[in-house]
Image 1 (spheres, rainbow, N blue to C red):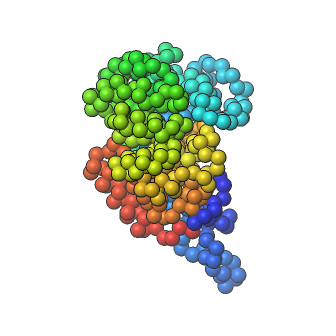
Image 2: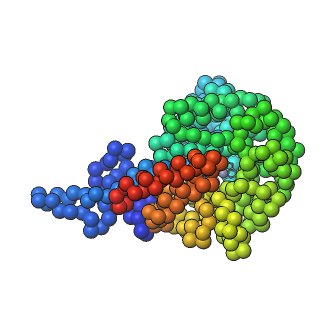
Length: 383
Ligand code: HPA
Ligand code: ZN
């Protein structure tokens, strides 16, 4: 993680705190003690403020939380030979110039997921990490076609994930909802077949999404299946404007009638579209470290998140595929906050956006918003 620039600066590398982060102090806030030692004024470090802040994760591909160590463990217990000699060799392959480079290795990696226990353990490992990051609620994606296409029944993935989600709620207090994503590089008939297969689970699946290779596969290709999902009362989201043009964001709004846009970065190229997104209070699920790793931005200092907030857009911060992109939820928050100099007010806004943009019931949203206010009021100044 880079040292920050801008409003929130990490300085001082003193005693490690309870969570392993470092105490930080702003210049001029170190008090010289009688013995000439420096003591810290009552302040909270940026990482600690972020980890303690109640927040939701709204853009997380569970297959993208498959860590290299886990990939080897699942391959071992399922008797699968991996084309990589070691965890290090696998990690070294995580160098991507664009979305497709990542997708190729991500679909290959998912092949180690074979049993309900694999999906349950994958989900649980993710929830343990994100609970430590201060997540109170998660809306996670899964890609059933990645599994059914290699002979793993829909039921295996869905039941395994739902079991992990239920256990996480019981043991970690993190609530969650499941979103089924259609792979956009496949045709709409395949998406319809997936929706039919999902029928027995639709009371436990909150909505449908659209992911995979964006350019050349516009939202319009899936207007029929999104209409069918809407008629069943499902929530609707779609990746748009990650690599695709602003026109894809418009299509997601006008033809798919989405409730959220996943990513949405390239919407900023179209001022009229930006005004519309702001007017409609459309939530954008933004993924800073993903954007960096997939070269959507060249440098986090150029990330559009701060601009989105200034333009009145309902942006949120999310991890996307944390095992591949170098950070879970809190690491995304910390890195982008340091790179852009986000203020305390920005952080509180982002946390609130993550709940108002969620599919939780209004009374649940209100409870989380009150928890954010209580937390922010109780915290000292961020160092
Ligand atoms: N973009 C598109 N499809 C995906 C992604 C992503 O970042 N992660 C998993 N599927
Ligand atoms: Zn994504």
